[in-house]
Length: 365
Image 1 (spheres, helix red, strand yellow):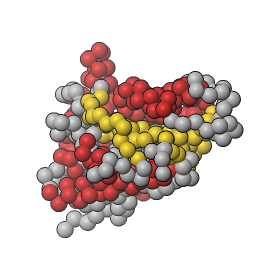
Image 2 (cartoon, one colour):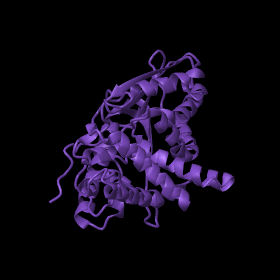
Image 3 (cartoon, rainbow, N blue to C red):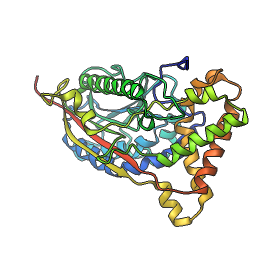
């Protein structure tokens, strides 16, 4: 019988190397152009408090902050057209307590795209708590933003067998049912607590992994390369077959119906309603770069770096020694190398389905 990882509570693993995480998030930024347009529209619609009360923006699942800079900067630019230059804006970046908040604040200080560099009346803060709870005062947030975060489940609900890393690619109906229930509960909780935190008339813009009409969840070449590379590490004796069998990435891609479920049948939940929902295929920036330079080695390295930064730590609870296992540094390096070699040997474009969801809180009681 396979055992569940000792640490069954998992919310968005954070990388060992924050610099590689920021670099890898360049791929995720492929979907930001459309998101910036959407969040800009939301900024033009939210009610504004009278000075000196600050305008409050919330960044749910901030990570190192890289995917927040341009969208929040765009929001502030729209807000400045609606209020005075000295009207203060408070940005609350939220994430788990073990997030690398040092890297976040360095990003805010040093990145040329930082909104702090262009608006002196904007102030940054951080909250170290999971967004599957209420983490900000009720009726306090005017506009919320969340990118590449809510696909991570709050816990691992079941093992995924047969060397499948994602539940979307496995054929086990029990695992699929367990993940579907957990995903539904997590989305329900995320929405419910944002409904409390948003002020009347406030908006929340979410960018996350989606499933389009073709049923594809995306990232197929990367997942295949990861599975093959893990099998090679087991054959070489770095990890055991049982450890590999326990490994999984606890993320989900949601369909349109999944996003709408908490709002049925009335269309309103916690005074929130869905005002915008679209699922589209985002650009594979690594493939675009490869088509320009034909450098297969760099193509494989970019995807492997992305995988290392965004998913490897999710695999560590399956090791017998957990995240503190002495094999972790070698495991990271050899897995990254194996993925890079496989993707460089046969470059393929990846489908990256993204969902854009906008929630608005009704102004009435």
